[in-house]
Structure formats: C-alpha cells, structure tokens
Image 1 (cartoon, rainbow, N blue to C red):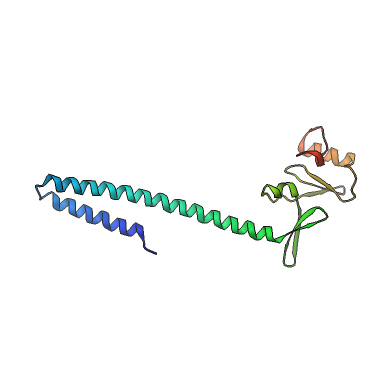
Image 2: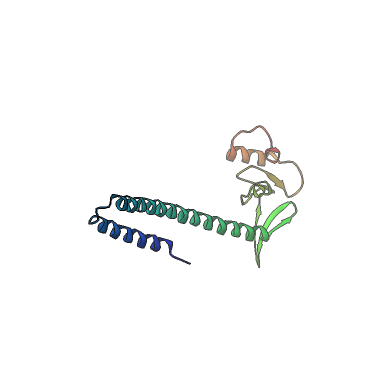
Length: 153
C-alpha cells in the first residue's frame, strides 16, 4: 500500500522549495501558482487525515460486527431461553428480548424465575405466573411499575 501521508509530505516539501526558488523569480504568475499549489496540498493533507480516521472507525466497526456474528452463531434456544455455547463452555441464559435488539444481557435467577435486569422480562421454570416473592424482588430492584415483569415490553 502506498504511504499517502509521506507522498503528500514530500510534495509539500517540494512546494516549499519551489516557493523559495520563486522568491528569486520576478514572475508574479509563477508565485501565485506555487501559492495555490501549496494551499491545495494542505487541503489534500487534511482530507487524507480525515479519511484515515474514518478508515479506523470503519475497521473497528467491522471487527465488532464480526465478533457479533461469531456470538450469534454460538447462540442456542433451549426452553425459550438463549444460551451461548462455545465448544464445551455454555453460558446464560440470556434475555431473548434484549438479544433481539442486539444486547447480550444475562438473566438472573430468582425463586425459580429468570429475570432480565435490563428489560425485566421474566421466564418461569415451572410455567406459572410470578409469585409474590418474585414481584417483591422486582419492585425492590426495578421500582414500582404496576404490572408483572413478564408483561412489560
């Protein structure tokens, strides 16, 4: 890959040298052209710096997306709960609602329920409605909402 920054730096150095030589030349048009060339090179140098920054941002975004793709390939849905399986390692469960919006939020276990600390989605291990101990726990953690954690969106 061509090192654009060095090439522009060399061009700026040559332009400066030309400007020094132009001081001996009495031709005003030559001096004006050299001054315009210097300004254009400065603009190009600024543009290249911005492109380099943007390239770094895009490279980081690509890296994040590749990591997300890898993680998504490791997710398994079991009993309406998401688990991440990486070889012999199994982690989770993770909230299915939050994962749908590209968040990996581990659910916490409370009295036979898995509750998401982010969106308060609840999944029962026995299929029944949340008991009073689960509702009290979620009120303590999340505050008063007036409805069951499994019905909030």
